[in-house]
Image 1 (spheres, rainbow, N blue to C red):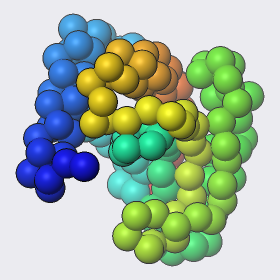
Image 2: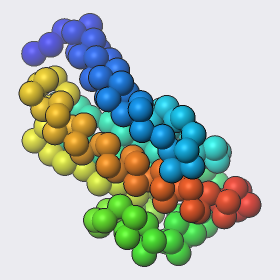
Image 3: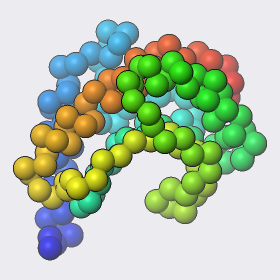
Image 4: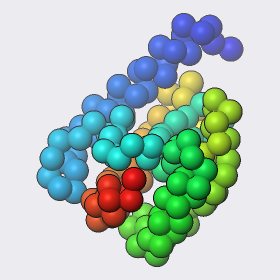
Length: 153
């Protein structure tokens, strides 16, 4: 078991390592991007990557406080589901209503892997191999659909 400080240090080390590894990769539009803290540029739409002691996940999280608007945004994403699936080359889980880490109701499109730990440095190559192609694919997808969401909200 790690102390709180050691756990925080390992988390920070992982995300710094991941950021350095992926930094040379430009966005699909050719611009520099902070992959570990990807900005969608649209309020209440987030790309999240996280890992703990048991699993890792990457997601699109919709957090608009108005349920009807959040559902409308989610339904718009559903209109692009075929494009999304073809871009990421796999099936992700689509959840209209779920709860985030803070107890807030959000909509989420995600995929995860289990049996990995941020606290085991031997798992880091697996984690990087999980996150890298998916965040790059999300960037490609987002480059194609972002204007629709900018106009929607």
